[in-house]
Length: 416
Image (cartoon, rainbow, N blue to C red; front, side, top):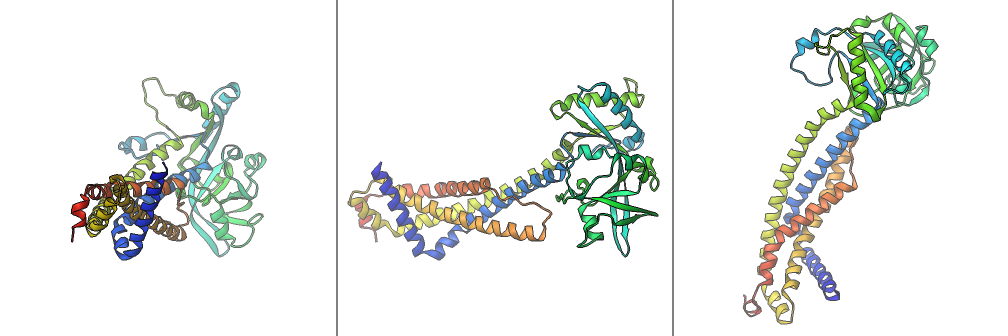
């Protein structure tokens, strides 16, 4: 055991001495590995970033909420059939809540109506266009997980009385009241003035349509004074027992079919959406990034491995007399094999470390210009990159190292 440890330590010392003596050659040899490690690291960072971005954006909506609407949250082929569906009525929330009250142990917990319309929000000379105006009830605060930066959500009394109060997203408040508190200030939507009672905390993420940052929430009836409820993409959001999700979907589907008077032979004329639909649509994007990254990584590492194998063969030729001398003095085949194998692995490891530094720098630059895209540079990616470097070194260095270990010391000593 002591001998193996000594041989390994000595092999590392010889490897680093050779790398130091041939710096430029070593850098050029490791270039393929550097490119490969940058590719695999950035690929992993992008995939983890997409996952983090989706989770961050959807976290405020709650993973225990089902969305009953007219349209599915995915691409469809029979658009015209779906276009002719009847609109969802916000009044459907009340009978669902009545059923929930009669079945307290059921999988459904709370139904909340919601409608949305895009409009311009104005404060004096400042305005924000294309803001999603959401009309809902005070119960929405019970099912979402978005925190408040300041203020509060509107109350049930304010909602039932259709008072002109509003809860605004972080980005809207920042754009209309830069550097100021928005609480108590008024904004204008169409011909109505609304008093801000709350500002949501910044949620971030890059699925803008699901973030609260660029939304304004109003009491449902106050919303109805400005926008037609029927054409405002009405939906019913239903909080369920997350541990009984399948049962909840079946129960909700049955309730909606009864409310809409559908006979058993008719298909559903509504859609029950959940966060999983969005996540499933993100998976193909991640797969394409992974395939592209793996192709570039594999190609770069293969080219790098060929370069390292070639240089290691050259190194064996250059040091043939040294190998003969060491063998004549009693060095074993495994010692010579280990020496050149460690040299190849060391070059790859240094290339891997260089690639990690470069990938981290590129990630920092991207994060500076695209702060909305969360980049995740994890320990797992570092270990994957270093593991790929070591594997490349072993693959590329084994054949030359094996040839060196088999050299006849008599022939090696006579080599010119």
